Length: 91
Image (cartoon, rainbow, N blue to C red; front, side, top):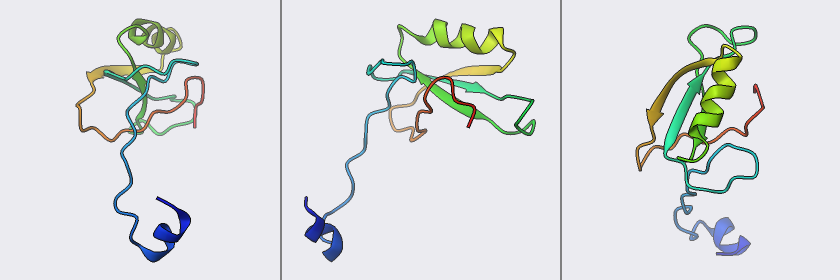
């Protein structure tokens, strides 16, 4: 694909990126969604999602629980399009 294909509309659909773990410097495929909310800056119904690989799930979950932000952990479905948010950002 090149810029001319994009401009002409002949580039085709974009390639889907693999869901990647949100742990800093980890590039492993994600298998879990850690759902959280920071009540100091988010409305109660707002939910943020970090993605976790099997190795970092416990670490990220503990990080969120210690700060009172964690809501739930869900299995990441293969076709789930939830984008990762880098760990440590409150967005």
